[in-house]
Image (cartoon, rainbow, N blue to C red; front, side, top):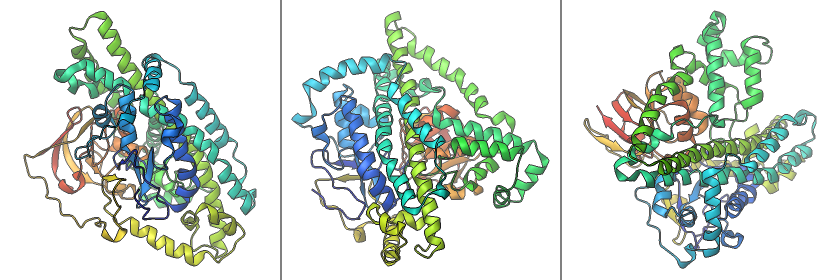
Amino acid sequence: MAEKVWLADTELSNRFPVMTRLNAADVMADPITPLGATLCWIPNVLPGWASGYVEDVCFTSEELTDESAVAGFIYGHLYVNQSSVRVLGIRKGMGWEVIDAIFFNSPGAPAHESSPLDDNAELTAAGGARAAWVLTTNKFEGADEDEAIANDLRWNRPNLRGLSNRALVARARSLMPYERLAWRSEQIGSSNAALGPAVAGQMLGADKAHLLVTILGYAGEVESAAPTYALWSLSRTVKSDPAMSALFDAGVDKVAAQLPTARGGFWSDFAAFIAEFGYRGPSEWDLGTESWESKPELALGLIDRLRQLDDSESPSAKQAAHAAATDAAMAEATAGMDAATEAAFRGAIGSARRFAGWRESGKSSCIKIMNEARMALIELGERLASKGVLDHSRQIFIAVDSELDSLALEEKDLLPTLRDRESQWNELRTLQVPTFVDGRKPIPPISEVPRKGSQVIEKAAKGTVLTGAAASQGVVEGVARVVTGTDAIADFQPGEILVAPQTDPSWTPLFMVASAVIVDTGSMGSHAMIVARELGIPCVAGLPGATSMITTGTTVRVDGAKGTVEIL
């Protein structure tokens, strides 16, 4: 078994050895904070994820005892266990190749090494009834319960400023069992979101397989898309108000400075937006990142970009424009089918859309709960920084869970350790970590891992056609702009084609400013790509090296249904 190379890493699995960054890099900060790993992910998220697999009759509890059986951390970076997901696909009757295509789009992945343990007759028998439920149900009670619990925890937050230091730690820790629970709907929604597309894809056959992404289209009421519609509405308020427009023209920092005292109009609407959606933010799976609530400037920056768009660019208008293509693709797909086959096909598509929505609902529940812990810890961090216990408030997230009690007592002895650890943690940011890791082999030390920018990737020449994963329908020609993080979105101009290393759903308001999106990592089943379809944004995902091969200013043609990018 490979040894850990960083304090927040997990022990890898011999039974399920292949780990991948694909479908992981689009949701998690790189690297995870030590507190995010030791308080939240390792003791709670990973076991909750595994429990979801068991509840979904894919595995027995005994099969998932390894720390990284479902996912884990290497060099502080999140990796999904591709081997166990492949076995899940086998046991659901899809096969590992299909599950790879839907969730990973993984050219270059190590092939699956079959094992007699891959098959489990008892689970396969139970899985037949489970599959029938997945393809027909209109109700997922687990997702409803998780959402109700998450909302209750958010809306009944105690007065954090009135809590003692130790009570703030207790508040953060008390939320973690609920975080573990909420991974039920996230995981069950995720794994079963693949069944409908798999069944529909098999029914389409090779000649019509290209129609699948277009047919999936708009699922309706995907929770991760809701903040984008709300941000759009706020941008219209600013656009129609000359005084607010002038304030935004002066810079987002000037707008943010008004937040503590401004009232009425836009300000009331923005406060309501933060109350409802403030738990969202970039790389929102980590405790140590900022949410829109903890740093409103992030949301204000998105409003600033959206206000520059014409009313015709609304998400509703874009979705309506794609509706005709979805209908046409469905008509082409079902042409020649008998009534029973067509009904089964439409049922599979309906299941895919419903479970995509439940997947996003589950994710929202998880991050609502996580943000409640985040806000308690930020309050503690601000107090400790003001008293010299920490160098800065966010250094609280460089601690590990076992150190919180000492910090809550305002002991300063840990500061040298935290400073040294923070330096090491920052070094992890510079690593060009491998896309795949085999847990049966030694993990190279950090000193042997290439640094970002050390590998030269040849620029794509005119006429080159790059092929990734079809993620969201539409064909667009435009000028590309490479954006490597949400802190650089101020440079992005409306109508440009966004080229990003990865995106999480907090980027999706920027999707609306873009005419199309290209990402290095991701697939048809990635979180951000589900939302891209919801918003009617053409997208090609899983195009490794896109941010290096395509330069800002290059004119490209994006075909989101075919998964191609042509350099013009």
